[in-house]
Image (cartoon, rainbow, N blue to C red):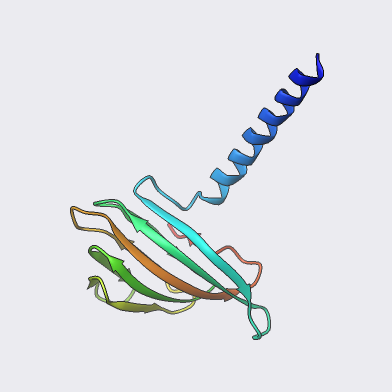
Length: 136
């Protein structure tokens, strides 16, 4: 195999492997929901970090039931948004509304509208734990 072919084969293999890792890390995402991490920083509080992320929902899109290893503070940027936290009535939110989800609370979110919606959230979570864990 020539050097060029070998380099191309290795590059393709690395790209495929990176794509597989990326797909695995986004496994909580569905085709109609996407969470984009914007920043992550250690905090002065022991074993805690802050994560800021933008969640984007297609019309009718949903984030299935899940938990976070810490608190979530959110703000609706655009579109309609319904937040369902176990033990509470569903909350219909609109742009400009904010919400809070306690650590470990089982919750889900959906966009009941006909246009996309987006939420900006900051999470204060235990360092080294996954941002979201699916719940059945």
